[in-house]
Image (cartoon, rainbow, N blue to C red; front, side, top):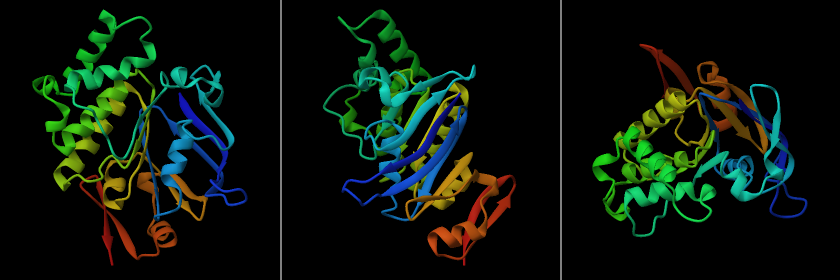
Length: 255
């Protein structure tokens, strides 16, 4: 399965587009990170990929049998069964972690919470190692724990696509690594299509499977993370850097 966006364009003001002609493919079981300088439109593009805002172009899910689902034609409740979205700033009302995860089942709830809704929520909480804090108030959680809870809520939607806007923002280094390791593992275990906006090049080359670089409203480069070049970084971020591979892991050395 893949998420296919063709010729996406969007602008808040008439005649002023933030990006235009953007085509992206994101595949199941892989993490794709969107990178670029501030103001290039990464978050807006992510919102377009989730159908949260609608611009020009087409957006579809291509199944393994080649059949397609037009995401832009779906009602929000139906789209929520396919796309899970985790915003940059996660705000929860006072509730338990369990109840926060259970809200991910809202697209499926008609007359009341079912045993299946509870079972799915409990299963995700267990798989994400949140059992010990399931009855804790989300407002008492650390930043990393809140991020995991937000991702768990999105997974409770049973969506095959997971979109995250800066999932490591406001986290310390340890929690940044923990969240991205968890995200990569969850993506592979559940065969998800994961697309995330990430600012940190170091984290991107280490945890992404695929990278899309945006520059001046266009896709400058789209490649596997292992194929990202020093020149790509120079052209997009205007900095001199060298990508280094050590023991199978990539890092960026700034000059």
